[in-house]
Length: 470
Image (cartoon, rainbow, N blue to C red; front, side):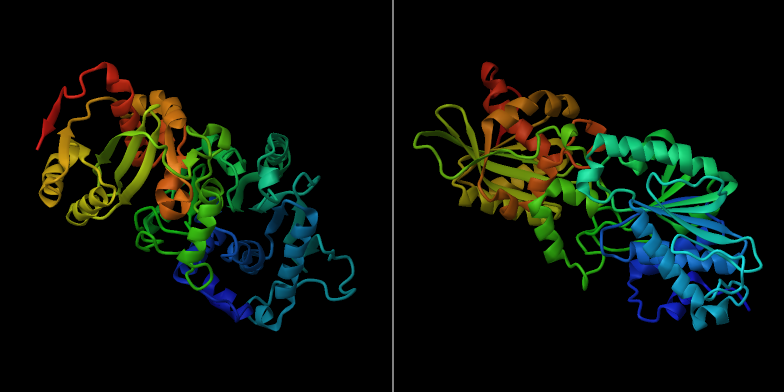
């Protein structure tokens, strides 16, 4: 019998599988792992997208079919869940379809043959050295050598993942139990929904070499000590790759969890959504602004100034961020309107001009860096009634954002419900991290910083220094 691909095998033993384009890439990567072309693999994807079905149910059966002498172990956050995976694998091994594909890989039926183990936690392959063992996190593996370890969701939920004690115990179990049962040729597969930046994957990323899987040629160029990381975002935000060619904003599995549903989940808790659904966890204690800003229901009676601040996109992947605001007699700043987009300048010029009209702004400030001068001139032509200023921002972005963060939190107010009106702006500000290089987008933080610099910090300086009027 010739070797079947992992996807063909899976469709044979589980004909009810619904396969999406990302599943084809996922199964192909798992096949490379089964063949030994990948020794250390991490896969992260959102909940309810078929992660465990492939990696912890179908893959162990496929591994034992390819090599009946393989010793495979499955671990999860509880012994009961690990046993559930084991029983599912055993049902596949018992099936007629599996027997036709891999006739040499058989397990005990009833009480025969005698002398072989078959329980919900362990099963042995007849006439071979292979076995499948399941264990819960912190369970024992005494005396068991493992050729292939599959770790699936070692944290039950956010409460466990947010517990420093649970995370520490998990790491100790991994280093003292999992690693001690492995040998030179052992393989590791970790499949997680991320919960916390200091979970097991996060700890490994800090200590060992990781490479993000973006093109197929990488499968044959990695050294054996490097971890290969494949991350599927629920809503595509990173550039397209050979393995995930979706355009920005597309859902991973639209018919199962579409963009509309995912955006609703993001609005409830952007920080948790970035971890669980996007694979980009951030510890709440590591946030620059915390998880909330001051909000307002209505303006105070005495308003002294209407303004607007715009930062054009630095690169093709960046956002144009433009915020209109009013300032009251106490110096508090109320954000009134927003344009936050990755559309090209030919579209965003009109969007900003319309926002300025809508918010009755009479003076707008636009950074002239990276094409901002031309943008400012175009906006001025569209709204001649607005006084448009442009200036060059020469200050260090990291220093500006970090040093002005307390002032931003103290003085700026957003309208109630802004998480629904401007979900991307809300997400990027409430998940912005103190570790500057850990942030992918700085545009929103840069603009709120620019507003407080202009309205508060620069009050002791000449506000017109370096400014050009159109």
